[in-house]
Length: 139
Image (cartoon, rainbow, N blue to C red; front, side):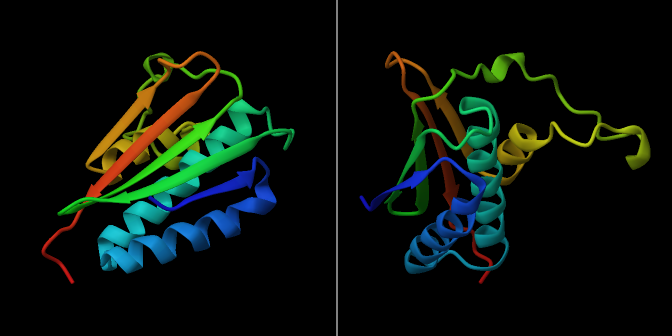
């Protein structure tokens, strides 16, 4: 299970992207599946930086990947402020764009783009997010 540790700052986003893109490509994800993974990872990492660490760049994000027979899983661990996804309101996706808030689609997008999204706060002081994408028949 390849694991890398990144500083929890916006400058690390390109390195996070490179790590995940390489691992997902090695697994054989391509096309729509690879795009879904990359977008979801960007949202997850940005949310951790913004919310767990208040955008201060003062912590770390541990990211591990795991390949299963037909699926690619990414696990994020951070040690910042806890996050309760149940408190996130469903976004308004029906109003005109100029009437919607600029933010608030991250969890929604992750859940739409990935096959499984699991938040785990069972270990005190550790926030864990695991997202899984199964291979589709599309090349």
